[in-house]
Every structure is written in C-alpha cells, then in structure tokens.
Length: 382
Ligand code: GLU
Image 1 (cartoon, protein in one colour):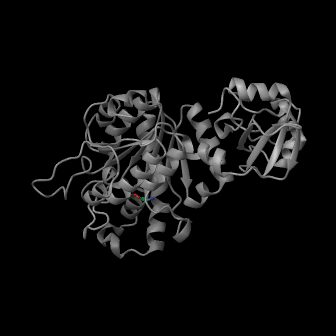
Image 2 (cartoon, rainbow, N blue to C red):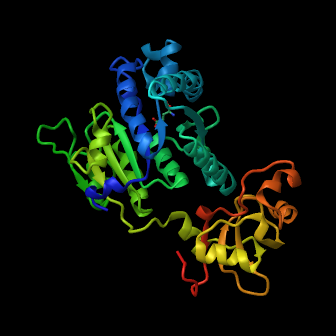
C-alpha cells in the first residue's frame, strides 16, 4: 500500500507520546493538546479513531512535585504512583479538549497480559467496537499500577501495535517529538528524513539506533520495531511530529509528511491466519443448514437461533469449529460464549439470551469478524 492509498484508511490508531503533551519543563502542554484535539475530532468524524496516550507519569510527576528530580532516579513504584495520580488528569484533559469538539472519550487501561489472553483480547475488542459504534474516542494507556515485569507492554509504541491488531486498524500513526525517521542521528547536520520505508531491513533498524549502534536515537527503536510487526500484519505505520499542524490530515491525503512504513502483506494476516492455520478448535458448534448458508454464503455472524448443539468444552474466546452435524467443519471462530452457555441459548433468538443466562455479552455466538471459513469448496472462503 503506497502513501497515495492512505485515503482509503478506515480505522486508525493514533499514539501520542509524552513529548507531544508536555513542554520542555515537563509540564502539561494544554495548547498543543487542544490544537491536536481539533484535528483528532475531525478524524473521528470520518474514521474509526483510537488514541493511545502517554503522559500519565509526566502529569502525575508534575502534580507530586517530582519533576525536580531526574526521571531516571525514580524507582518503579514511584513511576507507578505518578501514573496513578496522572492518569485521571490525563483523561480529564483529553475529555475537555475533545469534548470541545463534541467527542466523548473513554478510558481503556490494558497490559500485555490482557491482550495475550484470547478471552480478554476478545472482550477488549468487543468493548472497542461498541465504543466506536457510539462515536466515542477510546483513549488507551498501559495499566501502570499492575503492569510490571512479564505482563508489561513497556512502551506505548508496542501497545499501539497491539491495540491496532485488537481493533483491526489499517493504519497506526505514532506522534513524536521529531519529524520522522532520519538516516542518522537527527542532530547531525547531514541527517535526512526518510520519507518512505518499503521494508524494515537491518539498515533501517540501524538508522533507528538499533542493532550495531552504540546510542539509541530518542526512542526510535521501539517505533521501528512496532512498524515492522505491523507491516507483517498488513498494517501501515506513520511516524509524525506531534507538533506539526495538519500532519494527520496531510498523511491521509497522501502528502509527503513524516515517515511512512508500508505494510508488507497485501491483506491482513494476523488473527484470521492464526484462526485458519494454527488454532485447533477446542470444541464444535453444530448449526443448521440455514445458519451454514448465512455464514458461508452471506458473510453473516453465527446467532444462537442457528445453533443445534455443542460438542466439547470451551470458554469465551477459545477457537471453535463450526459444522453441520455429520459433516466436516466449514468454519472456525472465536467463541463469544462458553460451551455451557451456548448449550443454554441454542435455538433462541438473540433477544432471549439475557432471559436464559441472566446476562448477555453479545447478540452473536461467534461474531463474523472473529471467524474464518475453512471449507475450501466454499465460494466465500476468506
Ligand atoms: N504509560 C506511560 C505513561 O502514560 C507511558 C509509556 C510510554 O510512553 O511508552 O506515562
């Protein structure tokens, strides 16, 4: 996908770094937040927009008077405490700034652990879908209170990449305090901005200060790593200055701004690939011929009304096969309900789920977006 195709972007994750939201003295830069919010609100009107915002630690540190001591000297618990203080301030600022343009914001706090579990991944995905349907701008940050060691994403560039996978975004824009990726240390007088990266090679990684370089250039390493991972999933990544007015609009218009990392694959592989190739169904949901037709030929979701029976045991988010009794499975998907729940709602209308279970997660037993057709004979295999 070249830059000129960016106008076709439907869903975008914008990551805003601490440098974009704070001034040189480490104080919140309300002016820049407000300027950016006007652009983001415009984007939210035409695209599915998810924000990943850093800044909680910086805002909390400011409130706690920590800014006078160097950040490097703070231990983990101090940073977590600062994040806990700063996170509500950060949300209040986004709420105010985007609210001025009629946008409601929602706070979403995640850890790597949350997105590694299929069940929680799916729950997060459904929440994001519902927020976007309501025109809300989700504002994501790492749940710093609990995120230490092995469950930590660690940096919001990687978090933005995970969120993009979760929401099925086709573009990620990382806003930072430089104009993009430079071919050498940006302070060097001969440094030149790299406009387009076709593939993240070791040469590109070296420019970012990765392998082979003694000094890492301003957090570029994590950005290039995120872009590389996203490219492999068919998602483009742009690196832009968080202070350049109109940068996001220019990017979507295909204009030369920042650095654009082209997606490597023609289509999004990621989860669908995972479903069709790697995952083994933990059980089978048996459906009637009508449901088979709706799923295989009409691209519909599986509703409880089409379910005839359940084999095996699986939990919410587990991969399940979908079959007509006595035939091989024709589809595989992530279960929206556990096996016992599906048994109890089999044959019911979606409007009856709540009465049968006492609660309802979703109308669908398996949502279309979480499903692949596995029968090669089917027209609609995709
Ligand atoms: N979660 C951190 C914060 O909000 C930021 C992590 C990052 O910027 O990569 O302050």
